[in-house]
Image (cartoon, rainbow, N blue to C red; front, side):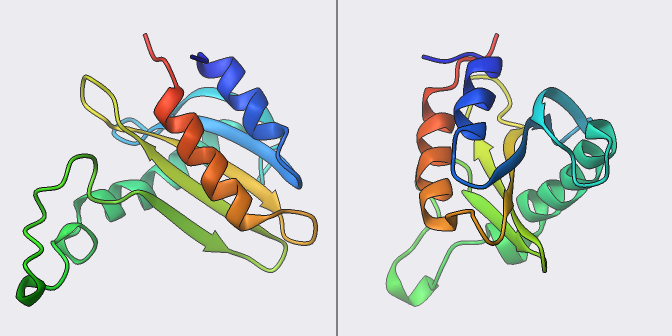
Length: 136
């Protein structure tokens, strides 16, 4: 089970990875970083991505249950939002929420180069890393 540094190094081993971080979305602070930042400063990137994560985690449009007519009650285990993907002209930003035993207010942020990154592989690997990450 990897800790923060090992987790970020594994994320950076993905094809096209430019930067990775573990961020607390309630405070906007980076708990760990690796590689580059899209704006040259990991703390700024952490604060900006935390705003996006906080919105997705708290707004009813994203957290409400699926189709109520289909019997989806929203009582499934885990956070209501699994990940977010932001696509820019030059890259992808994947934010994967990490479920923890305490408050689950952290997420992994992976910045991928658009030409050499593999978005599907990144989502699969981040899910695996989030499940194995040991905090504390």
